Image 1 (cartoon, one colour):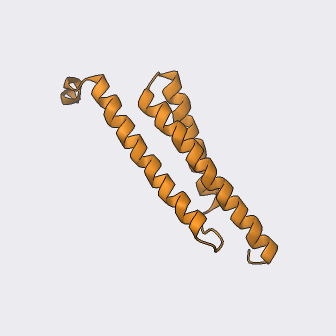
Image 2 (spheres, helix red, strand yellow):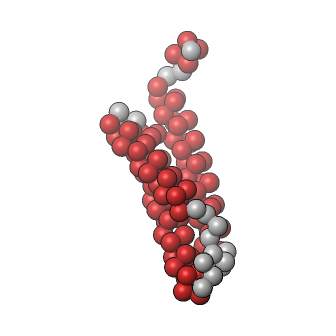
Image 3 (tube, helix red, strand yellow):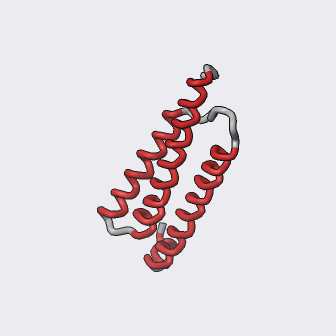
Length: 101
């Protein structure tokens, strides 16, 4: 892909940070939806934990290769996804207490 060689690395970093923050916005939307809905979560625990580990890997990858766009935005994503995991687990615990799960 020779045409990509003409784009400076710093431009990719800026675009990468923007794309990563867009991904964080999507996680935030899901987190807010989970918080607002009072019924038990329909999200699979494996799904939310899987994404947590994926984001964590990309944080480590970004640190290893000194790529700001990866470690910064995925670091934020880890925190947001951890919040999603906590909300899903709390909702499951409440549903079990009520006998709904």
